[in-house]
Amino acid sequence: MPRLFPPSVIDALADQLNGPPGRSRVAVAPTPLDPLALVRAGAATSGWAGYFSSPGRDVGGLGIGWRTTAAGPNRLEALNEAIGSQDLSAPVLVGFSFSPTGPYLPEWEGFAPAAAVIPMVSVVRRPGGSQVVVVVPPGRDARDVLEVLLGLTAASGRRVFEAADHVVESRPAPDAWRRAVAEAVGAIRAGALEKAVLARSVTVRTDIAARPFDLVSLLRDGYPNSYTFGWQEGDSVFVGASPELLVARAGSQIVSNPLAGSAARGSDDQEDAQLGHGLTASHKDQSEHTLVVEDIRSRLEPITAELTVPPHPVLRKFPTVQHLSTEVTGQLATPYSVIELADILHPTPAVGGTPRDDSLLYLEKIEEIDRGWYAGGVGWCDTDGDGELALSLRCGLLRGTTAYLYAGAGIVADSDPDEELFETRLKFRPMLDLLSAT
Image 1 (cartoon, rainbow, N blue to C red):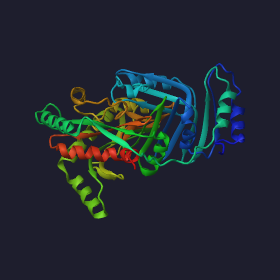
Image 2: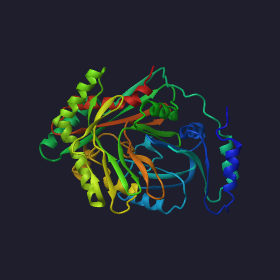
Image 3: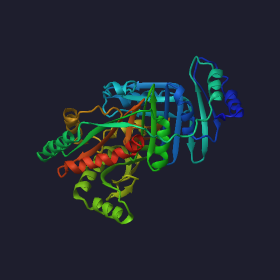
Image 4: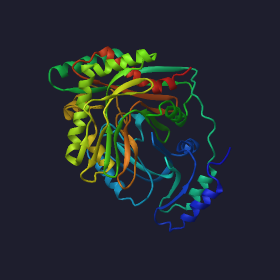
């Protein structure tokens, strides 16, 4: 198999890594390599690997050059302080769970409530080109790192996953989840809440193990306008293709793109247009969407010099579902980092509910699953505070021959349990279609 990096690139990196071994050292060189090719080549022999793509950029990394984790209500603040203390000019991959106390079930072992990693080796691809970035941790011999790099060869052809047998189990069962939706509707009509986002999970057991980053590659190709990700901790990989941007920052400019209100795609253009028109005309979906947008507006207005919130949502179409979408843009009045902005916004009513505190207490009481990193955030940042963080949706946790998939639906006063169950099934499809192929 061909080497990923030619000797000329290794030599260019070696020339930059002559510093003393007592501190971290960084080397950068141009490369035409796809960041996901790096991850696919080395993830199986690496304890940690990560990948994140947005429509204009992607980052892939192997090994740990630097890492920090945090837990509790101030976890993102602690993460931000730790990242800001680094003087390494290298990409940082970031992920966090829905709940500040983090995952608690055994399948989420190794996943902290919040984590940030500067990979030992990463490839960053932007519109202007790609770079390989090598970080040699203190005490590590640069020659050892470069030898690992020199030994990487291209992964074999991407395997389309075809399980000969599979079993799908719902958590909770569909009837139980319908009853939970009906109970939430009753609480909302009684005035206890305005909206609650109820999640459910399905477990897929197959006779052979998937190649997680092959699935990430398939998701990236199949959902090019989504935020595709993979985060490996030991023998587990959290993967997905999220449609929703929590927040991005570039200098003083910020963007958040909430999605709320969903409909299926049609079997032809006429049916697709009819379903889209029905979504835009739906009082229930428009009201649900407005709750999310107004919450984001109220949290961003105090920290921005200007904030633009379009008066009406637009339709965004994805292969299996279409959503109401509002792109909120602004200019910061003070230099909050992208991690601090996520701390201000998360959890939005798109994944939790409103009022925030009341809805979160309600979910703790009624939900039967451990969300883990589902409906949390995943993305990248740099030590200057720029970056992109997507909501971790349309996702699953892969552990050998078992996958745990997650989806949710926003419940408001007019919600119908059968329709909400159908919505979650649409949201399961990106992962379920891949894992249950025959």
